Length: 128
Image (cartoon, rainbow, N blue to C red):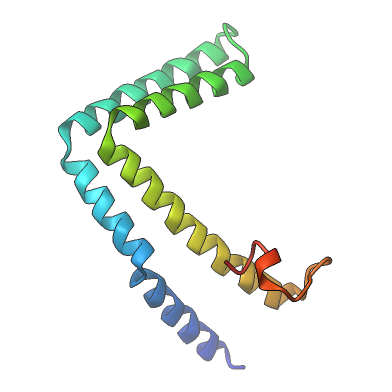
């Protein structure tokens, strides 16, 4: 197959992903979140907490594991406080799942079947 044909197919795939319901939902959720001043304040506060945690790690006040735990707790708290953030996080997860599935399928075709392939797509995390 010619290189240009491969690139053309990549463009086509990109356009299909761009037109997907997952991308549409992500774009809408992002717009709503950006227009939500309360959500923007929660995000700003969360980012400050993350910076403070990084400083605490550098200063040896807390371990990296403890910082990760506190970061995850702060993130969960932020998501729970804002419906627009919650919808954005869910839409991002769905979009990422789509992109990861596409990448997995491409990798399977490039590298060949993975060991343990049952030829039953319902058992494979790469094709969903």
